[in-house]
Image (tube, rainbow, N blue to C red):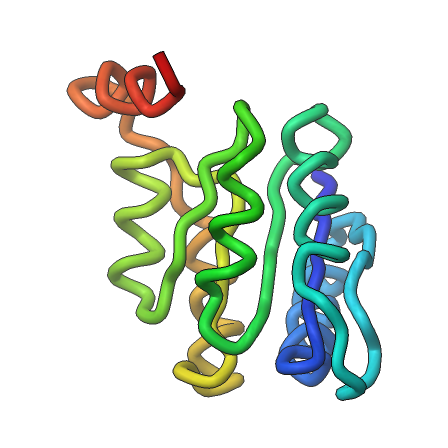
Length: 143
């Protein structure tokens, strides 16, 4: 499995902890994020993560910024991306089960580091249910 991860200045600490989790699971990680708290522009890392998922170069993506809204808006411009803003394990679970999310967007200013790591575990361990949700997911794209 390959995962693309990106973060702005609000997320280096979260990224380091999540990358450690992923590497401990034997998952290949491509890091597109910043390693410092110096101000950066979130599209500069959200775009390469989203492109990697959209183009099949990564199985899933993880995006981290202060509110997660900007990265989600950027990511969801890509036709094969379904990026969900998640702030609890329950919402993360539903984003995978019902929406087949392939990018999790984590708001670092509204979740603890422990919560964020737990959400990534939930995201990776949860399968899409398909069934009645498949038709809905197929309608997400622009018509």
